[in-house]
Image 1 (tube, rainbow, N blue to C red):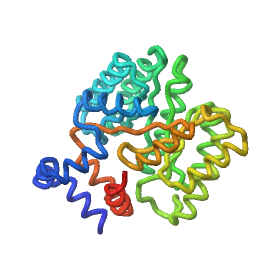
Image 2 (spheres, rainbow, N blue to C red):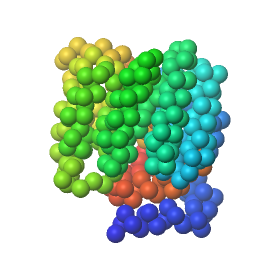
Image 3 (cartoon, rainbow, N blue to C red):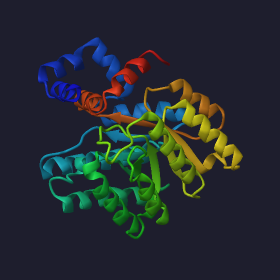
Image 4 (tube, rainbow, N blue to C red):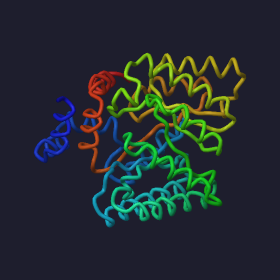
Length: 308
């Protein structure tokens, strides 16, 4: 019921217009979304870089409905990579396969994403493309896609993916990715999934996250630990120290505008931090769908609006 309510809100043009023009809407978008165009993302990235943190830039959008939209999305990402190089940004990019036309024409999506990875690989220093994970109907397709890209000569160091710790299959998926040396961004997962395929309680999800986290940290491959959960972060710090892992062997990752105090604390302590910066004109439907996918996010976002 609540999920359907938020999906309905995401599709309401009147509410979208109000939200994007109202002071509270601007506060939400300004706190969690860098802006609407590449220049906004560049400015936000430069600010974060000056604070000693790396960035992942993501153009908001998914589930395009025709080939032209997919090509336009890919072209914008080519421009982002150009901007990263031109401005000497410490940044990479993240994209969703449905934004590249996966549901429209899989061959086209492979062509478009392959072109972006090729551009990233040719950069000096080499860039990196994170293929984001979507809901469970796309899990295997995304992993197959990434494995294939990673095996392409010259692409191996410039492509990686995301694993969601709340999925029961994730341990097996991690082992297959590690066997090929593929970089992973580990997150808990934000989509609402059935209990048959996903852990439901926070305790179960946290336990699996920590288990997978330790496996990644000792794999000898550079991975990202995406979490705002202080308990898990302290576990990672303690584990790194106990295993004598150097700070440059992994990174913490957090969302733009959330727990900036914790981000800065970790940097001061010598850990690597990457901030995920989304931008684009689709911030309102994106924001509402995120709330609808997992209503617990409503309280999380509201609480963090009041934090530093």
